[in-house]
Length: 122
Image (cartoon, rainbow, N blue to C red; front, side, top):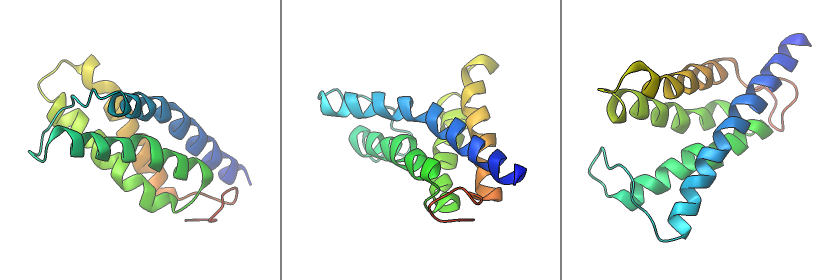
């Protein structure tokens, strides 16, 4: 039971802390300000939409415990890109947050959602 509470705490904590990042990106897209990094050359708007998916939609699914392991994959990829490509040459303090999220979501992806989830152990 304590393990399942721990899994819930991780999902709520990491998911809840990521959502404001996704909301700000969604607000930029809606307001017509789609300026965003384009590390893969697919365009700013498609990259921004993928970041919104990873930082808003997936964390909501993770909080709810819906396809938790699958939902961590876009977040993990996004945080790896943020840490190693976008902030790759920056000092530690600039990439630290992305690395913390990368480690946290990787852990959630490995352990799954637990008992207190819509899709138990997903």
